[in-house]
Each structure stands twice: as structure tokens, then as C-alpha cells.
Image 1 (tube, rainbow, N blue to C red):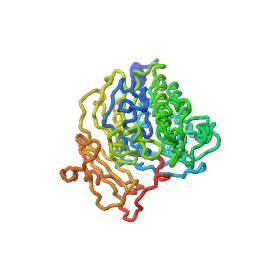
Image 2: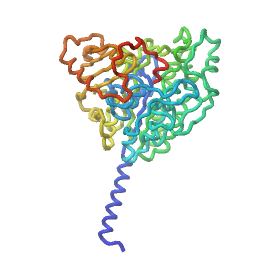
Image 3: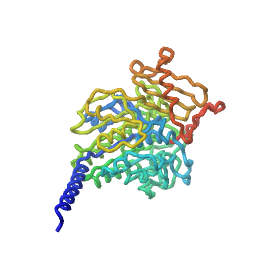
Image 4: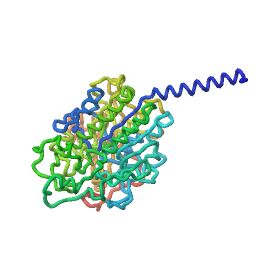
Length: 503
């Protein structure tokens, strides 16, 4: 017979196990939805009037809309790295779109792999009993690399490992964990083509630049399956759609939702694929993406877990600058200055919507200043998990609860292309330093975003003390192992958009 002391120990141990299971079951599910190159103003809830986004607009009505949220970088890979590790680009390992291969079908896939030593949100949540999934575009390490999602805490991965491959929505394959999932799209074709004159019919464009398996549809299926499989346990899912990153490719039934009158001439390509109705195609890609989000939300309702699921939505950077996106036509970033690839507001200020029934008041707005590197500590705060060492962000959970916005520690960005650039947001002040690799002692421009959100008036001469403080923050950046930061006096005056940057 078991002694009374052993009986007590056994009972205590059983109670701890049951308590842990109960705690795990009560933990909220977390879905983080990440669009690709979606501008601040390309959602109806943020002022868009042409592109239809009913799901996101309803998400904003049901939750909280952030007006001063920032991406981790003005381009894809470092922004995603910042999101997952809670580090800004002054301390992060991945700071640019560093490629490991070229553009042909037989080139190695992937970008600079995230180090195994980096701790991601998924790795932080695993000890708390979370199932973890990543569906969509990765960009932080190719097949068999230490940066592969399955090596970074994600139980399940489906999508594009490589950002270059993600330029084509009808690829030959996607990745299902570590296995290539072959698609019914015929032979490989380049995602960057130009034609000399319009093709005879719209069908000719689909025949030449399309296929049978539209990658976003397959990724939506994988995300729904992940929720179905883990609906009875806490889960963390990143749904990183490649939309609306070019090329312009969308199934015909979605294109039909927008009138022919939107377009007066076709897009002949360069740098991305041609399309007969480019403006309608761009809008249709976003509307179809919005519909996919609705399917995800409906899946939560089907399992009756929508009230216990936090849904976050944002974009990895601002709208793209390349031909085929029509940022001026759609007013993609409103009155903000700059686009993707710029540390001005248009390149890094992004939409952010959070819905958490019973915890976030519906239809609310916050002007809390926040950035991608704040997502990790916020999730840690919500779930009671320990924040890894070296994280730059801080939790904005108080803002989600409706508390008054608090002043954030200074935000920092750097981007190495286009001559090198830095930015610091400190209270209402925004400092920007350009051409760092081409100009010794490049000057800091200063803007007061409260008075001048479009960053049109440099007031550096009027506030030398603020400039000095911001410059000190810029100079305190930590060197990167692949630093392209040093002054290069005879560097060419222009950077090649392709293939130097794939994000």
C-alpha cells in the first residue's frame, strides 16, 4: 500500500499536471496575419475607397485599429525576422534581403538563414503547450538550413521558403515542411518578363502567365487544416500571405469583381509579369486575400473558438515602388512620404488591427506607437511566457486593454540598400539619415510627425539638441556580421532593384 507521504506527493503531482492542462486549455489561440507589401491606406478601415476589403473592415469594427504601428523594416526578410525575434534592425541578425541563389529554376532557394540561436515567438510558446504553424511566405532560410521554419519552433510549415520563388503565384512547387509539394502549373516560367506589345486576348495572358494551382488558395487550405487539427488545444498560427506583392496574377473570377473601366491600357511588364488589366488585377488580389481572411475567421467560428482567439493583422512594409502597383492611383500610403524600400513613413508605417473578444473593446482606435519587435513581448505578456534575452520590444498589452497610450522607447530602423539609410522615432520626432554609404557624415533630417506626418519640412536646424540625441541612437547600432554599412566613396550612384532585392 502506498504510504501517506507518497500519497500526498502523488496527489500534489497530479494536481499540478491537471492544473497545467487546464491552464494550457484556457490559453488564448493566436493568429497573426501578415500581408506582403500592403500599404497603410490599402484597407477600407484606413481610408481606401477603391479596393474592397470587407473582412478587414469588419475586423476593425470588432477590434482595435492602430494608427501608429510600424513594420520591422522597409523590405521583407528583415521585417519578418524582426517580427519573429522581437529585435529591431540595429541588433537583429537579418537586416536585408541577402540572397543565397539566383533567379533560375535550378538555383538554390532561400535567403540568409535565421540563426539557430535566435529565439522566435514559436520557440517561446512551445513550452507553454502551444501547437505552432507558419503558412505562407517565409524568407528566413531555405531547404535544409538552420533557418527553416521547422528548425525555428514551428511544428507545421506550408508555403514559399524563398522570396524569389514567391514572385510567381503559379510556381512549380510549394514546401510542405521539408518536402517539395509539386503543383499542377506546368513547367517553370520566369516571374520577370516584358512583352513588346499587348497579347491578343486576356486568355492569352492567363495561358502564358498562369496555371491551375493558385498558391494563395493552397496556403489558405493549409491554414484551415491547421486550425481544424488544433482547435482543441492552444495554437499559434502565422498566416503570411504573399499578397499583394507583385507579380500581377489572380484567378479570373476575382478579376471580374472590378470593372473594365479601371484600366485604359495593359501593363507590359518590367520588372514583373505583364497583365491586360493591371489596376483591376492589383485590387482583385487584395480583395481575394481579404476573402481568404474571412475563411480563416469562419473556421474559428465553426469550432466555436473565435472568442478565445486573438487575431492580429498587419503588413511587412509599405506599398511597393515598382511599376505595376499604381500606388498613386490607389493612394496606397495616403499622404505619407516614401514607399517600400524607404524609412520614411510610407515605407514602414503599416496597418495594424487586433481583435480579441471580451478583452478589446470593439470599434476602438489607439495612437500607441508600436512596431513589429513589440509583438513578441506582447504575446509573452498575454500568455504569461518568459521573454527571451536580447529582445528590443516591449508589450503593448495595456493599449489593447484601452489604457492611455504611453511613450515608447525610441524606435530604430536601418536599411542597407539605396545608399544606406537609418531612421529613429522618438516621441513626435522622426530622424532620417540617408546616403550613409555614399556620404561621409551624412546629415540627419528631422521631422515633427505631430505637425508634419508627411515629413515635408526638415526642422533639424531649429532643434540641434534633438538631432544630437537621435544621432547618438543611430550611432549606437550594433555591427552586423554581413555589414554593408561602411562608407564607400566610389560606390555606383544607383542600386539595381532586381535581382538585388527580392522581398
